Amino acid sequence: VSAFLSKQNGILEMATGTGKTKTALKIIDTLYRRQKIKRVIITMYGNDLLAQWEKELFTTLKSQVCVFRYFDTIYKELPSFVLSKNDAILLVSRDENRLLESINRLIQRDSSAYMSTLLIFDEVHGLGSPSLRNSLTGKLEKFKYRLGLSATPEREYDDEGNQFIRKEVGPVIFRFPLEAAIRRGILCEFDYISLDYQLTVEERQKKRDIIAGYEAKRKRGEFFNEESMYRDLAAVNKMSKAKLPLFKELISTYSFITQRCIIFVATRDYGISVQNLLIDSVPDFHTYYSEDDKSNLQKFANGTIDCLITCEKISEGVDIQSVKHVILFSSNRGKLDTTQRIGRCLRINPGEPEKRAVVVDFVCEGTNNLEENSADAERKEWLSNLSAIRRMKNEDL
Image (cartoon, rainbow, N blue to C red; front, side, top):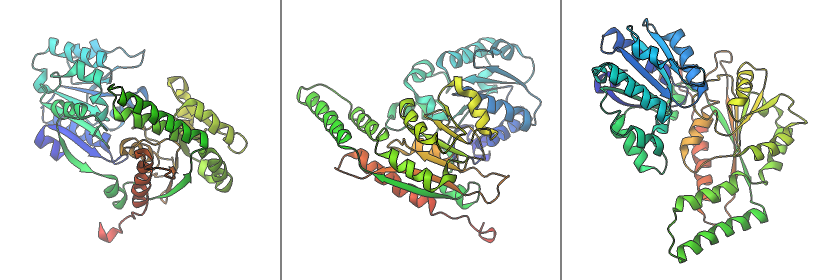
């Protein structure tokens, strides 16, 4: 809070589960008490996160402020926010059209809003997408107070996006990483299980074909992004059939692993293959791929469903303290997604003070020197080192 009040703009890089939302609420309270702001615009991606923020605002925020919503298909309270004569907060989707409209309407109504409005960007790394850059360049930096929140603010392999975030929101002004959070007991310790697999003959041939296709483009003088090649190669790993028998053996040996568990897969189709292995031994599992499955997330949160299969939907932000196990069928080369995903199970649970999490990962045994195989080895070393961290004793804190 002190770092932000001193700088007035910038990013808090704090590990998942260490209190980014509560810190932001404290900043809001302080600025309102000091009469520095009249308006707050809070934006993020996903209706679940927006609803979670709404709950936090009503239960935690001390200032008497009107809260308005501009997300989903049913909340269209932007006009009321702009016209409100009282201190007001707007929760708005991180959508280029809605966000740009919210800013433009506010400035048209009150030209002094640049000096009296706090902009908050939750999971700020998402702000650097090409569509948002095109719509918002030069629009955000005019505001005096700009706060970004993320466990992983750097966009992977996107210098333009990172430059945009630094320019429009600000630099990282405070860091509290996973390692420190585990040592301090703010996040729980965890065990790491790596399951080594080898690609099938067909999968290895598919990767050779991918490389040959890109080499042919190179010889023809056609431009291609090397990242595209690595994404295509990594997709073969993410959907490898070789993982499935290892998973079957895992759940038959350690039946507890599917209790309070989130399983991350690359695609719905691959998720079906995982479901087929769960059917006989885990009756209370379900999927969460889209807004259509929203009720499944709620059932998982309240314990009606014990195991959830998903792709991207709950990698970021959503707070379910009872999650104990995460299974990573799908992991990207960089740390961003993996950090977000393991963060689902590292939150302290007041209902289980001795909670210890488990992260299960699939590691491709290198059959060549391709970068996506070395990325698996690097992730294994990183997660192994994280799992070795122990909570400090009270006298050492």
